[in-house]
Length: 389
Image (cartoon, rainbow, N blue to C red):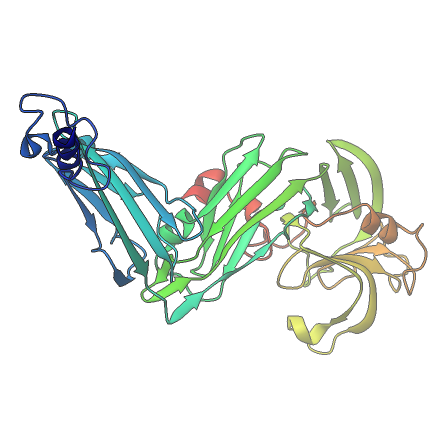
């Protein structure tokens, strides 16, 4: 009995790692410790205990004289790193970058041609960056928005590795629809589908920017999930020649409102514009948009922003008989209102109360050109083919 016990201990001590003894009874010489040991040799880079490891390209698992059957990489919280075994089982590589300043554990198992297993375990810690960036996004988490709302993110540093950053942002929808990203310059990335969102669509955006190298030596420090829902379909069509706005919901006209748009020399942009901000009252000063001292109105009611450059659709209490008759603004779309915006029955108040951020306003028959896609959230003015370039 003592001899048998010693034999068992001998076999258990012959493994090539903590999990290497399984299957050691196969083949000839099952009683010989050297014959029982797997010939598969697992290698893990970086070396065990390494610190300051790069978040991309440094983690690799390989094997000689065998095939990898299992590789598990986790951070200290137990979150797994996605990856895939390739090259016929000879290598494993992660499918994404690693987080910065994080300790990871690696467990890898391989089998040789006889089915004998070898295992290897290791730990390492990624670098802590000196320079970082993050992104400011719209819409807000948990919001309900109109069918024209893209997911737009602005970065605090110019991005020179756009493919790596874009890969770190994942957009999922329910129901499923193809969503593509488009860069405006090197600090803004917008995502949208080919056509306006379907009402009721639920959108989830995973920002896995922590550890991604956006430019040489500058790493993301953000990891967040953003969820928003698409509300009803409201698209309003402003005809600058007819001085009207037709408000449609689900393709049906629900109200026609008399408006005034930009007068000659101050014509309103043509094109599709997405509501990005709603202000119950705001100040509008010509100085801020390059019109000198031509106007300074401290209490503009029911203002809805359409472009970054200062185009609003807003209440107008000083327009007199312009609404529905002639264009008198400095480029904005004006709707009849009262000073103070207290009357909920006037057109501007009705429209303000029936609109949400992300709704679309289309201007046509103006004498100005089409609004630039990056002037506000107005990427719909690009064709799908151009958007995906």
